Amino acid sequence: MAEVMGRDGTWTFDGEILRIVPGRDRGVHKLRQLLGEVTVPLEAVAGVSHEPGKKGGRLRLRLREGADPFNQAARGRIPDSADPYQLAVEPDRGGVADYFVDEVRNALVIDQVPDGPVSRYLMPGPSVPLTASAGDGTATFDGESVRLEWSWAVESTKKSAGSQRIALSELTSVEWIPAAGLENGHVRFHVRGSVHRLAPKYDPHCLVLWGMDKETRTIALLVAAVLARLPHPSAPAEPPAAEQAALTAQTAPAGAGGGPPGEAGSEGERPDDHDALLRRLRELGGLHRDGVLTDEEFAQAKQAILRRF
Image (cartoon, rainbow, N blue to C red):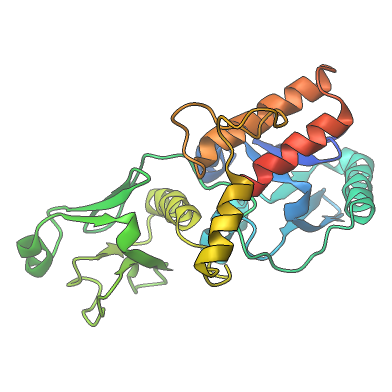
């Protein structure tokens, strides 16, 4: 077990999973605290580095392209202080940080984890429901649909259109352009079959962003949650019907019996319920640490859950 504690939080690595727990100090960026604990499987890691400095150093975790929906949503749109994959290291903790980096790098080599892009998300998005405030309204996402409601500052065109409810099945993508300088930003929900030609302040599928810190925090979480539940942008095309049927038969989890712990879903659980799968992954880790599961049983069960992510 390798562990590094800093003012931004704590990173631990048990050889298979890297856990990032945000700090509770008032100086820790609010987005880190809202995001909460982040669990990163080793197969989602592309690299890690420790950058020492005179007044302390910094750990940086680099994820594989497309592995994490939050990273896909937030990249280049949030400040470094809000990035959960950076950790400030105190001057007297440099040796511990170097040891942590060596442990992660050794595990990547032993497990032969590639550093290239992936075609499916290896990590879940933020839990839902979520509500994000913007300049001219709010967006609420419950995992199945996005609801847009307008504030007093909305243009008459949007106000006349009324509140919007967009089913997840109707969404093709989400466009997030942050505010820059005196220019407003926007979040646009691209709906299947629609052509967006209106400016953001007139588009009923769009929220105008004024660039406030609170606005950025909530938008980052909501966009990541939506992306996590949309098809992965690098996912392969749908297989032929016969191949799809065979694939479904191979991966059907619940009630089959005889599978390893964590492979069968609980009653009523959807196969893509990321939050439930993440809880099960944590439970398996606890059983493994307590000696209830052998290394082989834990590895088999963990891979079954990660495939369902």
